[in-house]
Every structure is written in structure tokens, then in C-alpha cells.
Image 1: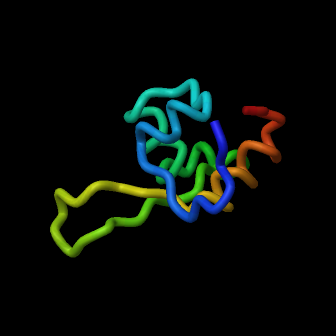
Image 2 (image 1 turned 90 degrees about the vertical axis):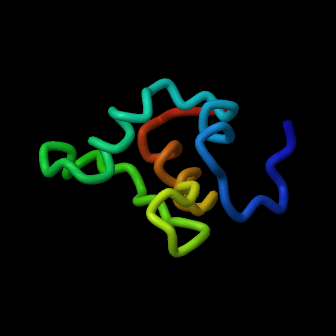
Length: 72
């Protein structure tokens, strides 16, 4: 799969990249102070509604993968 030109990635994109964790654990890694040293990048919303899809900036996710030693 080619990732050239990607700016954002959604949940399905994370899983396609090989993200091994569940949605709940991912949220814990974003917001829980216990994960301060290994904090996952915070998501953003595409709309103003609270039920809008969460997306992540691709460059931040890629940087996190590289800092943790994950490859995809």
C-alpha cells in the first residue's frame, strides 16, 4: 500500500498500517497521564459535531511509529 501524499489517517487506516491496539487502548495512550513517555498523537475531528470521525495527522503517526520502533 502506498502512503505517499497522505495528510490524514482514520481508524481503518491505522489498522491497515499495522496498529496493534484497540480503540480504547489508543484513547488511553492519547489522554492517560500514565502513558506520558509513550503518548500517542492526539486525534482531531473533521467537523464540529462531537460524533465526527476522529483522524490523525499522518506525519505525527509516522513519527510515533518510528520512535517506538514499529515498522509498516
